Length: 420
Image (tube, rainbow, N blue to C red; front, side, top):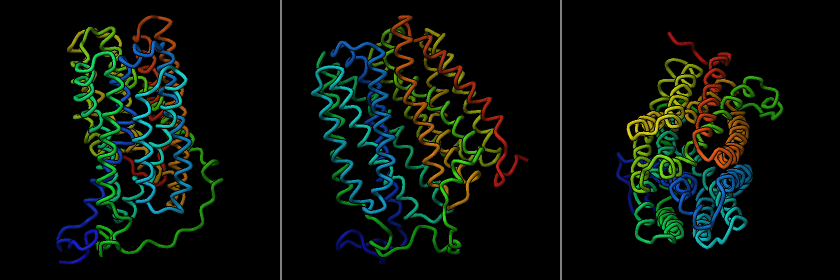
């Protein structure tokens, strides 16, 4: 036996605690995105009716969440330089549970907007330290794999929300949406207990080295990072523009998915939840699969293919009013759902030197977040105006097609090998 597990428990020689950490990271992403953000998709129709909101207002609730997420992502990056990951994760999970529970008490649009914005703040505060753990626990050539496993937590959130929330709505009737937020808060509280028990800051805490560290030589010292290099990098600006197209288009789809199926598609909330769960199941490995393919054929070609499939998914959703077309749309989106963020994370290393990778990814996230922030209110206002979501999904399809063309127009980066 070598190493220590927590206080007084041994770690088997052949077992590396990094796998516990990445599993916990999967649950952190489940809470930060899968439940706190995407759970809103299934709750939205009942919440809209209960609070008598317009679709434009429901779009602004999503935007408030995204704005809170962006602000806290920047703040959490600063705090993480002073706090160990474990402390920040526990703090953020506690805040997130409180915010989700508080959402069940809102009485109108202003209080709902405040609750969703605060939930976004807690989500971003949790996501940043959770996604830094692989850089501590895994050697550089293993970190992409670890990050890909963690991003699957978003898909698990889709599965859970699609299965559980319709049942809560069925059993509790008009007040079911309030109980749904309480359920999400309880799930986050359970994850908090797991983190309190098992999460550790670094391999040395359990007597181990980073996973895979014995297989690689120590990296050379990094040269000082200069932030102006990020803002002067034209390749990153182009990459950010493509990323914004994803943020704008996909968020329309995931925000109004259930509302469209129930209001215009003739599906019950339970059937819409099952279809949402299907998206979650299919999306679990999307980041790993498409990220690996993009490594082989080139980032821009990988991005272009995914954007093309997204455009087809959104177009099918807008024009097809039958169960088979809804399923086809869900499948197309599910198998590609989290692939673009994974490819973007890899592409940052192609366009920026190693010491600037974190700053460059943060820069791209801000541009991506702007696309997310403006998508829902525009789509909601369009739905209010036309009395249909078809126009909103057509808009999402068109922007995804722009993203496809923008990806093809990207200039290959110096560190990126062209496909054979």
